[in-house]
Image (cartoon, rainbow over all chains, first blue to last red):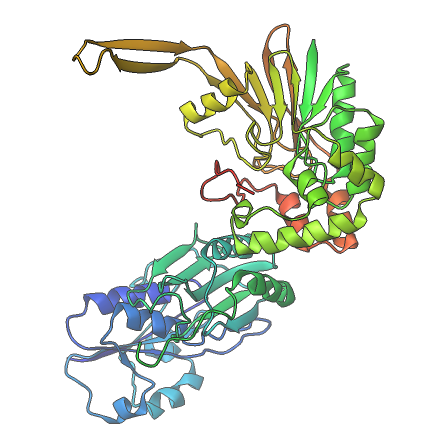
Length: 249
Length: 273
């Protein structure tokens, strides 16, 4: 029997980690959709830019992308576990499916998705209780890093500075970053949790050239200084001399 | 007699004034400076002039050398591309600000200073760029002190003060006598005397976990060492960094005094220029 779950919660509460765990423990086919969510008063949603999907597809190579209309119109495979992620700052007013934000329903219907269950971090005990923050104001900033390769030691310094407040009060930072040896890392940090996660992707790109996979940095916080972040990025990324991969590679 | 050793001033005038006041308050009138008077900080001329005015014997640090000779260190001097780009910015700014007279003073500084069996250097006896970290291999550390002919080596450069005693060192050698005739082998053990490395930390850019300036006081009569921490007006220096047009990240680093510091993978690597 197939199941469709809508998982919502504030930034950094652990939605994607929980979803990854469910996907890895499901024996049948799996699908994933990330909805953009809606800004709340003074609270900007960070555009994810495909980071979560790219990371989950790396970890679960047969993961179906539920935004794919062809797949939406095709008959659903049996025993499909469809997980829908929704960033949402405030706890829903009602429990269960009655608490689903009405604004997302047309999006789901267009993709032929109908949740069987809605779970919200901080409300539903079926989800782990994380130390989530009570946000009052939040800016978001993102940078597309496609084709960029980091000097590894510079990445380490930049990330340390970023999450320790050198560019504003950062509450949340996540990224997919390419290294010169062909590896890429999912970097993840949340102010309420100790330490950063640096998780290597399983897919390795050809070394010493510019990987063509998704690479992006997303930051949420207060009093962010995008100009200073940009200047530091320019000093951390390896020069344009690095070639793009040849078509045969 | 107690004497004070200061290092790594990094153009931080407020920190230097506070440290000198603390030394004066203890009635200590022998001070040695281990270099890096300039670099990263906003008051290079003021710091050099204060050292000259107080006639403090000073050896040359890596920043003092590079300001005079130009940035000719190889890439190994910087642990990352980011550190290198920022270092170049600071170098260019400092070179533009420093008066010719103060540059001439930095050029005149010796690589090391010696007082009896006490040796004073910036990085190590080998190079101003070499880091003698507290966890460096004991034999290598002992070699640095022993070959320099010192009992106690005072150094800086790491911005992290420490006192390290190197004791119970011995080398066991097996010598084969009359190899061709298959003679007996003789084992010899050479016991090495106690040696000590004292790192003075940093006056102007502390990285030991808080923002206080550090230096050391060594009492030759009792052979005791005290690492001293001195509070100073950090915000005054941070404001001056930003107002001078130096990268604001230098102020952020100073304001936090993070223990984290960038270092080359092989800290003991000696640049062959």
